[in-house]
Image 1 (cartoon, helix red, strand yellow):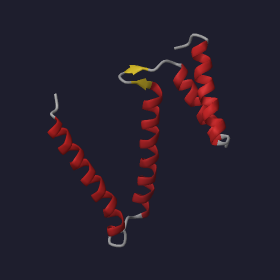
Image 2: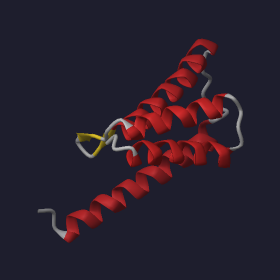
Image 3: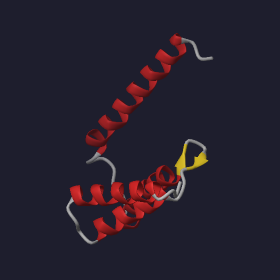
Image 4: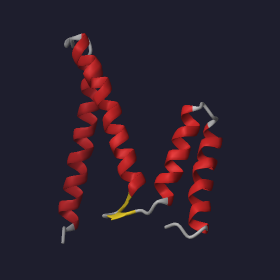
Length: 107
C-alpha cells in the first residue's frame, strides 16, 4: 500500500512537471522551429491518441469488456457528430441508444 507521504510527493511532482511543460510552450515558441512534415505528424498523432483513449473508454469498463450497448451508443454519437448535429442531440442520441439497448437486454 502506498503511504500518504509517497502519494503527496507523487502528486507534487506531477503538478510541478505539468506546470513546467505548460510554461515551456510560451517560453520556447520563438526559439524552436518544427518542419512542416513534423507538424503534420504531430497533428495526426494527437488525433490518433485521442481516438485511442476514446475507444478504450467506449469498449472497456475497467479491465472487462463493457458490453455491446456502450460501443453502439458511442457509434451513434459519432455518426450524429459527423452529420453535424448539435452537441445536445449527439449526447442524447448516444445515451438513448445505449439505454435502449440495455433495456432490451443487451449488456
